[in-house]
Length: 191
Image (cartoon, rainbow, N blue to C red; front, side, top):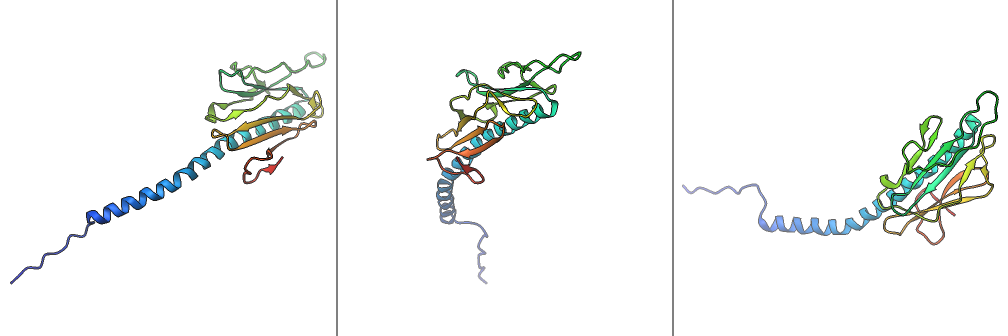
């Protein structure tokens, strides 16, 4: 009686090499898409946080009837940052003083309603900030920008491919948009 050898249920070296080659090709095709995805995500996250901070600063100014100063800081050495500082509440019937400028590079220098209101670029690796807008204060009565005027700051993705602008109009309303000539992002209007 002859015995028939059973085949082992495994992979041959040729099958394994073909599988590895296919995976290598698919990975090589996917890496640029992933890099682009993370590039967009970093700049969008930073822009959304700046937009939120601006909106919160304005809302606190109106809610508490106190001026709130907003500052963008980029000294070229430390990461850039954005912070807000509210005026001190009036005491003894005296009028409230204006909000002091905020230096967001100093711990606890930017306080609104007894809470720190600051963000830094440290959370958004390699996102750059463009020309900084002029100092602004949100009026406690109406939330309007003092001195009146539109302020714009541009955030650029690590690769430089994507830009997003945060625009604050004279009434203190902030919006996010994509500048002309830059690739559009889902959910963001063109400037």
